[in-house]
Image (tube, rainbow, N blue to C red; front, side, top):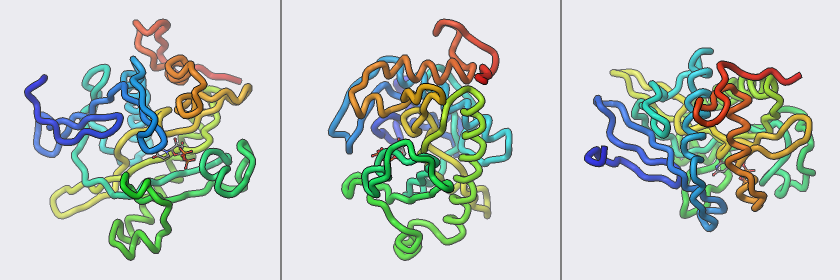
Length: 254
Ligand code: UDP
């Protein structure tokens, strides 16, 4: 385990060389950061839950034909993924006003948006991930017009599918961030979903109570973070058996 080569270490994950060329191992850490990593903590068990939730979501998206980097689960904290070239653009999809959109445009948090909104942010820690337009992305060569089209189409498809998946278990998908990568297959290059989808990268509110079941609990010092992430996993029916009550499928909440 300790011998394998570390390819990249980010704030919440580590990538190791995979067993075959073109593969990597994605390892989920317990580290938590917010506000450009000015706020930090280690939350025991968070990596296990995010790995579990993200692999489940990626597998379900794969089932409906969304191309992803996910190959298979390896253990509680790790998954085998395809090596991709990450497109340096974060794609945010929003259904309900919250976070930076609520602050920037003065829209009350919780306001249902008239339609889903897509935003792009340039991935740069030094520049604090500034919001950019399609014009910036193509002018500076971060992605081609075709890749932007692919990211938008996939982003909306992911949004529709996940909105339904979560609403079925009593959770509102307020917004989320995704990243895409270029998968090189011989002569072909395809845009595929990469990184993770977890309560670290989504806003998830209980439909009935509006209780936050996501990273905002950390950003806003609300406590109960692990319990909230566990609740998301429990409702999706994917808590490990030794994590209390294991279930075999999503719990329908009417
Ligand atoms: N998000 C993320 N990583 C980032 C920025 C945002 O995962 O670097 C997610 C965030 O959790 C939320 C959505 O993207 O689900 C929209 O975030 P927003 O722009 O409101 O920014 P924030 O309030 O997180 O600063």
